Each structure stands twice: as C-alpha cells, then as structure tokens.
Image 1 (spheres, rainbow, N blue to C red):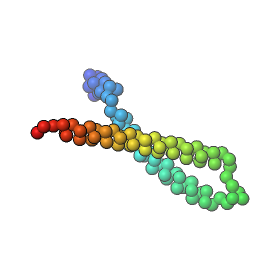
Image 2: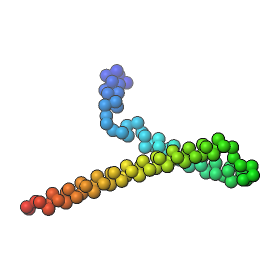
Image 3: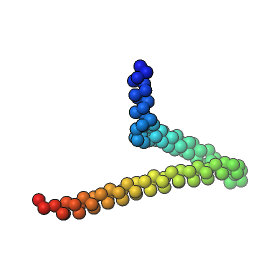
Image 4: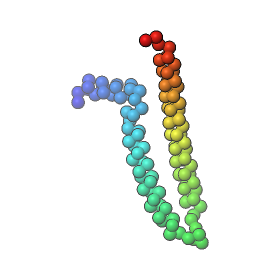
Amino acid sequence: MKTKEFLKEAYEVFNTNDDHQDHEVKMAKTQLKEIVQNALETFQLVKQVNEDTGLPGWVQSKLTKADDYMTSVRKSLEGMQYDRQADQDAMDYENDINLGDRDD
C-alpha cells in the first residue's frame, strides 16, 4: 500500500462517526458466547460442590461481580432499545400529523 493510500484510509477510519468501525458488535457477540460457555462449565463444576465443602469467599465474590456486570450491560442495552423505540414512535407520530396537514 502506498503512503498516500494508507494516509487516506487512516483519515477515513479516524474521522468516521461510524460506531461500528472497530467491530464492537462482533466482539461483543464473541465475548458473550465465551461468557455463556464459561458459565455453563462453571455451573457444572459448582454442582459437584456440596454445601459442607462450600466455595471460597473469593469465588462467590467473583460470581457476584460477574452477575452485577452482566446485569448492568443488559439493562443498559434494554434502555437503548427503549430510547430508540421512543424516538421511532415520536417520528411516526410527527409523520402522521404532517400527513394529516396535507391538502392533496
């Protein structure tokens, strides 16, 4: 790649407002698959532990933290979906009003 082409491509990458430019969605899906796999494997291991043996405190602490993080991500994404739907509803309402004002 020539220097001019490289600079042009770099400029486009850094000056694009496209949030998906760095593949965040693809990376998130990959990470979520790994989280699910780890959760299933961990669940199978915990099933083998009886209450008398118990789990070390640090293990329960990490599980609590992981649950808190995942809950925060889910709630944030749900909020984003709600906001997008509210925006769409407002635009639909505005379009309905504007269409009603037309004298065709």
